[in-house]
Every structure is written in C-alpha cells, then in structure tokens.
Image 1 (tube, rainbow, N blue to C red):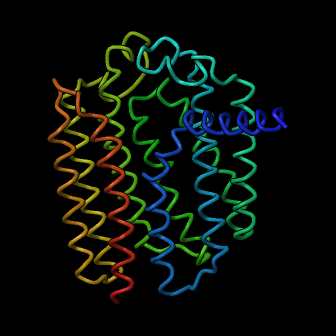
Image 2 (cartoon, rainbow, N blue to C red):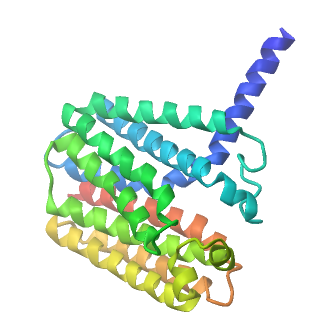
Length: 295
C-alpha cells in the first residue's frame, strides 16, 4: 500500500516538474486569442463541445511540445546562464530522455487532436509543429527571433478559426497579427535581461544587437501595431462598441507595461511579463465573449 502511495506521489511530482519545465501557466498568454477566434467563428458556425475540447488540447499540447523542445535544445546554454541554470534540465531535475519523451508525447497529442478536428487541420498540423519547434534555433542566427516566435504563436487563432469554419477570414488574420506583434513586443522586453550573456555567447536578439533603449522603442511600436490590428478586427467584424471598452483597458495595461520596464531598470520585468500580459489576454477573450453575447 505504501509503495502505491509513493508511486502516486512520484507521478504527481513528475507532472509538476514537467509543468515547471514548460512554464504551463504561460499558456494563458496565447490560449485566450485562440478561444477568441472560436467565439468569433461561432457567429456563423456553431461549434460542438468537442470542437472546444480538441482545440484546447491541440493548443496546450502544441505549446508544450514547443517549450519542451526549446528546453532540450537550449539545455547547454541555459546551464551557463545564471538566470536559467535552475531550469529543470540544466539542474538535473529532469533528464534529456525524460524531456524528449515529453516532447514526443505532446507532439502526438497535438497531431491527434488536429486529426479529430478535421482532415485539413491534420494536414496543416505538421507545418505548424515544424514552425513551433524550429523557433528554438532562431536565436543562433537571427536577431529577429522575436518576430519568428510571434509568428509561430500567432498561428493559434487562425488554426482555431479553420478548425471551426474550414475557411479563412481577413478578420481572423487581423486577430493573428495582433497576437504576432503582441508576443514579439513583450519577448523583446524579456530578452533585455540577457543582453550581456547573449553577447558573450554570440546569441542573437534585438536587445543584444541594438541595445536596450532601441529594442524597447521597437517593442513599443509593435504594441501600438497590436492595438491597430485590434481596431481593424473590430471594424471588419462590425463589433459592438462595448468591445472598445476592453480595448481601452488593454491599451492602458500595455502603457503601464512599458512604463514599468526601463532600459536602466529591469526590476519590474517579471510583473510586466507574467502578470500584465496574462490580464491582457484574458481581457481580450472576455471582451470578445461579451461583444458576441451583447449582439
């Protein structure tokens, strides 16, 4: 009996370790964008409960595979960086084999979830998975790795829309563009923490190439574009004016984010990255859901 309890405890601990490795809580950054795509598609195509289940499972498993793969590829680099040396693989909490198993399982779940949605989604899941995994190599050869990351993640709303409608819409492209610029913008801010390390290891990023001040200016411009694309989506879908209230709140939060993070002061970057960005994503989803309900 004691052995059974011990095994259960060990399994629970292992799941927690995998969750920490991929920062599972960060799924909330992009998932609300994908769900917003589902809600917008709902106006012309009624999704079943299973559509929601498979879309969420596909989203979570794709991100898990990408994050796990990133941890494997970057393990030797993370070990040299004091900020990342405590991550699960460099610190020895998880082995490379365990991480590879996790990535393989997550990839299979993603491909299977896509297949359950439609044959088209299944075919498209392979290039999507490739784009997500390849991100891990981009900082080795291009300073525009932040834009690549934003693009890879921005496929989520389009994927959700295609899963429901089997078609494409300019409006959902605007939503994906907003996610692209949103992700790229705060990833640039986050990369400011590793400027010295990246330069020492000859890794590529906009902050290490241009310096923190210029990089933050680009980040600010990207977040201005985020709001522009939100407004373009609002106009295209002829949304209710109540959605503008949520866009105003998002704009205020983005201004606060850039006010908190300064070129010579990165002490508040975790607040900006983890807390504000989570609220931005949730506000977007609530705004879309409220708009549809009001209409």
